[in-house]
Amino acid sequence: MLDEATTEARRLAASLHGIDRDIAESAYMVWISLGSDPDEETLMGCAATLETIDQRLPPGTLAALVRVRLSRLQGLVNAMLDDLPPPAA
Image (cartoon, rainbow, N blue to C red; front, side, top):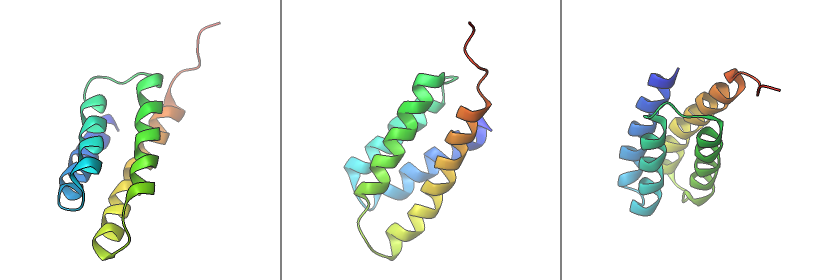
């Protein structure tokens, strides 16, 4: 699942590059964060960044297509969060 999320993050960043470079930079940071065996804190940060990206996307057809990729990546990050083992007591 991590490989899939990393690939989606890279694709999202590339797709966003033509819409808004600042938003694309945020997506690149998610891609980099996912590439280094992310822990819970990192995944939570990625989820928050993806939510911010979603809120900052402008209206329009191209952004709507990017939202599909964004939604898929958000689902993957949330699934990885759900799969994390519970903290040791």
